[in-house]
Amino acid sequence: MMTTLLIVTAALLQPPDVVAAITVNVPQRVRSYLQRCEAACEAQVHALDQEIDKLAARFDRTQGDESDAARQQLAEARDRFKRLQQEPAPLVPIPLPVKREEVGCLPAASYADPSREHAVDVLEVVDSDDVIVRAWYAVPAGDEAAAIGSDADRTFVDLWIRGVDTTGMAAGSPATLKQVFWVSGDQAFDTDCGKRILPKLEPLDVERFRSRRSD
Amino acid sequence: MDRIRAMSWLLVVVLLVIACSGRAADPIADPIAQPRAEPIAQPPTKPPAEFARWFGPQQWERDVAGPIVSLGERGQFDDMHIFAPAVAIENDQFRMWYCGSRGSAGRRVFRLGLATSDDGREFTRYERNPVLEFADGVHSVLTPTLLRDGTGQVLRENGKLRMWTSAAALGKRGLHTLHETTSDDGIHWAELSAPLLENLYCPSVLKTERGYEMWFSDVSSRPWLLRHAASSDGTHWNVTPGPVLWLSQPWEAEVLVYPTVLLIDGVYLMWYGSYDNAVRRETTAVGFAVSSDGVHWHKHPNNPVLRPDPARAWESNYVGTGCVMQLPDGSFRFWYASRTAPPFVHLYFALNTVRWAGPAAVTADKEPSP
Image (cartoon, helix red, strand yellow):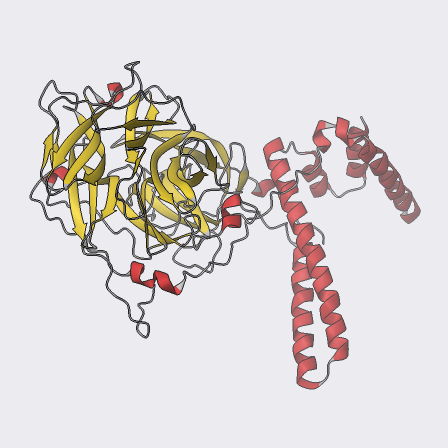
C-alpha cells in the first residue's frame, strides 16, 4: 500500500515520460539486475568522489608544470564523475562461473590479450543463432585456489549462447556480444564421447528499462 | 505553485521514509542484492629458476611399431575396452596392470588385467586374467596406481605391493570412490577396501619425505580439477584445501584428468590429460606441470607435450590415462591408452608407450627462458 501511494504521488509530480518509466512493469529479473548496476555505479561514484578530493588537495599543493598536470587530472576525474552521474549506470558483467538465473553482460576481448581480465572467444558456431563460446575470468581472490597460488591466475568456462546473430562469427576468434544475457538453463548436446552439458545463456532486453541517472 | 511543488516533494520524502521502514515486507522493494565480489587476478608467481630445465621441449619418441597391448580376443574380459596402464619393474621384469571391460560403452564393468614384459615395450597377457574385480559385478576397477618412489619405481611395504584404484558403477551416474588393496605377487590381490574418499578419480600416489602424497581428479562437479591429498599411512587422507591445477591454458577443455606424478631432484613433475581444443571431445592430449612442493604448480608454456598421432590409427585421437617412470638410464617412459578416430566404440582401444630422453642439461649462464 505504501509503495502504491509512493508511486502515485511521485507520478503526479513527474513529467509524462518519467511517469511511464516508473509505472511500466519491469520484470523482476531485469529490475534486480539494474539495481545491481546502480549499486556498482554508486560505488564507482563514491570512489571517484574521494579521488577528486585527493586530486584537488594535490592541485592546491603544487605549482608550475606539476600544477598543470594535476589540474588536467582533476578535470578528467570531474568529467568522469559527471558522466557517471548523468549516464545510465554501466552494465555489470555476469559473474563467472555462471549460475542459473544470473544476469549480466559478457565482455568483448580476446584472451590473447593478457591485460584483460575477461574475454570471450568463439569455440563453435552451431547455427544462425546458437554459438558455443569460452569466457575467461580471473581466479577469484578469495578462492582457495588463488590462496594456494600458481601461475595460472585465470580460468575459463564454456557457454552455450542462444538467440544471437552468429553472422560473421568464427571458431577461434574473439566474440563480440554486447547484449545482456541471463542463464536460462542447461544445453545438452552430442559429442564424440557422450552428451555434454553447458550453461545456456539467452539475451535479456534491459535497454528499454534503463534510464539516465540525472539531468 | 512552487510552494505546492515543494510541499509535494516533502510529502514524497516523508512517504519514502515510511515506505523504507517496511520494505522487507514489500516484494517489489527487495533490497538490492549485494553484488558478488569481482574476481581479482592474482599476480602470477614466476617459476623458480631451477624449473627452467623442465620447460624445454619434451620430445617423446614413439619407439614401438604398434600397440603394446591390444583389445582381448572375443570373449576375454577386455575384448571391448582397455585403458589405464600402471607399470612396475621388479627383478628386471616389467609388469603392467590395466583396466579392461566387455560390453557396450553404457554397460562397461572394468576389471584388472595383468601383462608382463622384459623390455617395457612388448607385453604378454597373463593367462588367467582378470586378477582383480569388485565382487558385486557392478562397480568398475578404474585407474589403478601403485605405491612408488619419486622416480616412479614401485615400493613394497611389508613385502607387499600396494595399489589404489578409483571405482564407480559406470553408466549409472554412480559415485566415484577411492579404494586400496595389497598383493604379494601382483596376481592375488586382497579384497578392495571400503571407500577411502569420494568424488575421486584417477589417483597418482608417491611416498615422499612428507609421507604419502596423492594427486587426483575431483569429479564432484564440472569442470574436473586436480587436487592434492596427504596421508601418514596411505589409508586416511587429508585433502589439501583448494584445487592445485585447473583449466587455464587455451588448449585445455572441460576436464583435467589422469595425473601421473614423479619427484626428481626435489622437483615434482606432473603429466596430466585434457581434451585438446575439442568442443565435442574429438581429441585429448597430455600436458605437463612442475612444482616445488606438489601443491603450487607451473604449467609448461608449450603444452601439450604429447598429442595423438593421426598417422597411427590406434592412437589417432586420444592419448592419456597412464603412468610415467624414470628408468635407470635417466630417460622417461610413458605408458598410456589411446583411441582411434570416432565413433568411439572402444573406450579405450589400445595401450602404448613412448620414451623421452629427459631434459637437456642447463648451464647456469645460459638457462632457457620458461
